[in-house]
Image 1 (cartoon, rainbow, N blue to C red):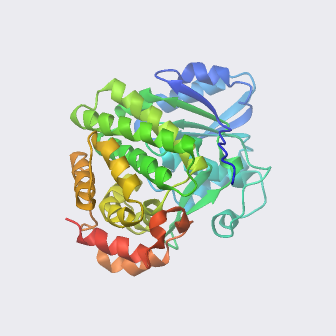
Image 2 (cartoon, rainbow, N blue to C red):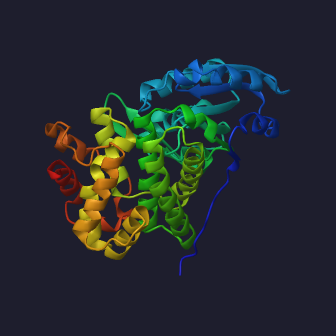
Length: 381
């Protein structure tokens, strides 16, 4: 029997309004020249970037703080290269990802490449894992959803090839994650719902994953139950501080699951969808989910019924009931449950650029499953 392994190398600080105290706690890691990789704009307007910079500059061993804020919602290879150039030019020693998953992923890419002579394309396309030259990464998420603060992956969009691909490896686990829900309290409605649905997807896919363990399944159940309660509360009241905190917590939990059980087909199919349409990760996952469930049910009926029942807070049985319940939940978050808004002429291009381990998902047994899920997602109402 193959042993189960749970690997959590990241030191975690969690709470509300705890980020300044946490910076003091990790002062021994903060040294030399520090780069803040951030999505900017709202965080800058609220003064958070200036406050973070000031707190870092007060650390004894920090010489200089550099800000790189050219990060798109789907972080691009061209942006990663610019960030890497800035990091090399400024002789950066530590990288801080401050923002949503985009900022944290781009921070990881900068950290992986800056301390080595390898090309970033070697990590993205040749399967090279970041090595000893990888700079330390500190992740401070400002959204509740991606779990990137506790994962070993950085997802980057090649804006020339129209491909969304990943750099993966144990050295990409952030050394520290500071998960402070206060940063999520200014996130607008649609982004709250999109990132929140990502938590739901992480919970479901890491549960059905062939790499799942008793520990990750237990975490999935807890996260799905809370997300099923807290996301509707936030849909009704964005100022619900308790719901914000709980969503940050379960997002963090699912970051642990990402590093230990990974995800399934919806994530693999969303990457080309996001690359070709420049839609958000959570938006694309929601649009694919009812179609995916239709096929997953055929290979994993008990798990699908179990998970949808937890999300709904009541017993759900039968294929159509599971699909309908998921569609209703997605609609309650004002997210799409189909690809009807997307140009179908991109179908073959998206199929051709699906990458990653499809076999992690039981539904991968279905012949031509990638095409079938995409096509069914266009058919769903």
